[in-house]
Length: 188
Image 1 (cartoon, rainbow, N blue to C red):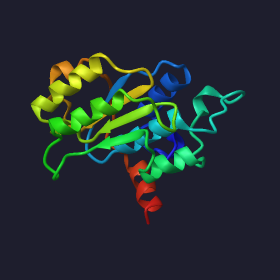
Image 2: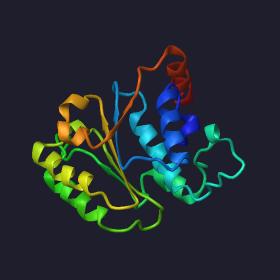
Image 3: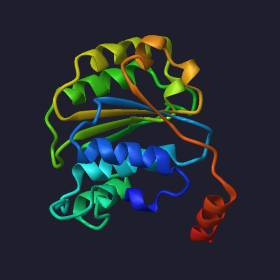
Image 4: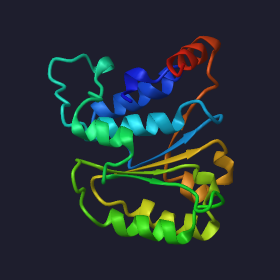
């Protein structure tokens, strides 16, 4: 789903689009805001933008540059099968473990396989155990070139302050009635 398809989060999307187009993306972001407002969807849209194969930005207005949503990379990311976009979710629906973060650290050391940028999405990041968060901290302090971390959370205060300090925060707002209605109509 390209940035253009994200409804009700214009401020967050505009900030990310400008950073991407300007070549000023941070190595790590913390997407925070209420549950169910599009944080994970926006993380996937950013992953598409940085890995899109059809991204020809010449002559396109900066405010409308986006992933195509149709190339093989965009389709793989949308389907959850792109080898360079890794989603880290709680094991057994309880916590993100240190073993999962160690596996991420191993993958960070490797170059991107198909895409331009390896993207790691930790969702929900606030379910990381403290040892896992400390292990992630080392990776965030010394990021490999061509990697992007996106921590998704409804509760940023549950993350270690040292982890938060290494991420650029992007706040997501509650959805208004109009965008919410459009999203519901989109999903039938």
